[in-house]
Length: 419
Ligand SMILES: Cc1ncc(COP(=O)(O)O)c(C=O)c1O
Image 1 (tube, rainbow, N blue to C red):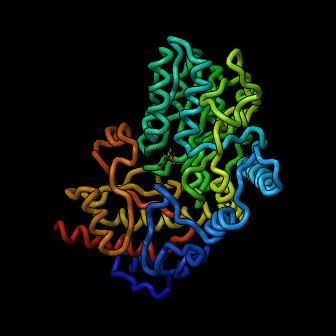
Image 2 (tube, rainbow, N blue to C red):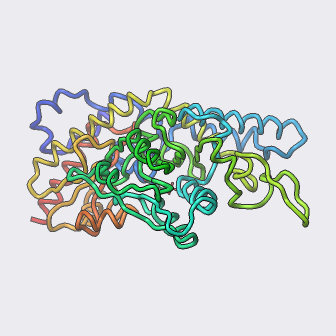
């Protein structure tokens, strides 16, 4: 990346930034074959690029070791079953859970729908309440609306603080013993705000509610330990963690899963089937109907190995530094409005006065800078911010200071074009 031409940017005047090493201190961009030289990929919050070890794990699984799991009587299938279950233990260890508390799902969206449908269907009654927050992704809103319509439960929405965090003081004042579930983003996909998850768990538990954390944007950026967080359910998607699409994890407390009914029926989730009566397998199999995404699970395991080899604390520190540089540089530009708290995790949303975010994204693309522009599947948050859309830059292990420079140089160009 050193050879990337440095655009003229406001960053050049900052002593702090001049002092930063060139390139990426994590030195990881070479691991990512789909990132060409000079391309600033700043859309990791949407999906992360894939490192070679993940690509190789997927290729090996299809080219050398492929077979179904849990059914075959032949050696290859038995081996694949061992590999699949070993990956479950790996995923459990990654977030501090037990392996029978890990359910492989298609992604966070499916994980939340599973909890809403199964746990919500069994535990919510008319008049019960569900607490969400203004900044939730649609994946952590719509499944609750669907189950609320079915059960007669009511949804409440915790507000944000002026610096765009979930306002836990306000939430504490809203919670009652009718609340059965609190479901919050661990890290906001738009603002990067990090939830005080432990406090959220204490507040939820104080009124007898369960806490679900949407960890999609947290697991790629910080070490997560579900026991320390004190939550009851935790979900994340593999593709945002440098793993494949189509695979994700739902973690839940064993006693909660044990009491939950299946939500999808089919092969692999049963104990005995007859037309008179069907009984179900214990968790996690009860919630994994059908042939699972075996190769996706192995790719996810490789992704977990990859981020753990770098170290989640090193990744967190790296992204925090990039966010700091970005916010410092953008706040020096008069027409730029920044959203989210100063200490946001790896994600910076912004707007430029008089310029639609889609135009920002298109002009930045001409400078080989890829950002996201839109509502980020968070329309209630957009309404709260008083905008239809924002521009969003989000970082990953492959980004370095030169990507921040390219972004800021591109934004200066946008402001020149729009006068
Ligand atoms: C905070 C958050 N929650 C949930 C999701 C949904 O993830 P997926 O589409 O992988 O199921 C996303 C994806 O953008 C997200 O950022």
